Amino acid sequence: MFNENLNEIDFINSLSELELIYGFEIPDELYDRTDLTLGEFAEELAQLSIISDDLYEEFFDIKFTTMKLIKRYIELEIKTDKKSILGKQKITKNSKSLIIG
Image 1: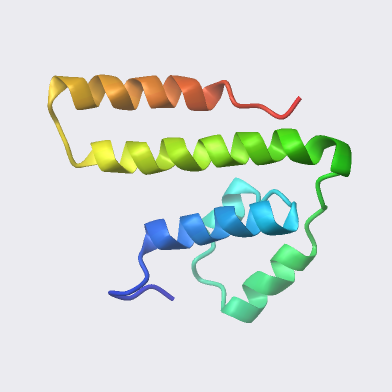
Image 2: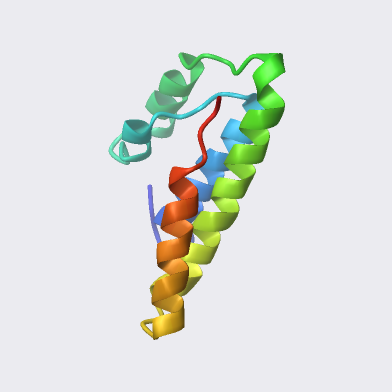
């Protein structure tokens, strides 16, 4: 499914956007199922529970913040200076605090 025009980061971003649009949360293990065809993947997504209306706003905020943190982490990933390493550590700490409650 990946080629020079679609890499793993694009795939993860696309899945995160699907979560926001359709209001479901993709389990982590499904992110790793790159062996599935698009049809098989769609079948898996169709079985996911929809986030309730009363939790959706919080879900959206958490998911959107997570997407921004992932993007920033990836930008820092290629850098090895002290400031970038501290930035990655801060993002990791902030990511752990994002929980739907």
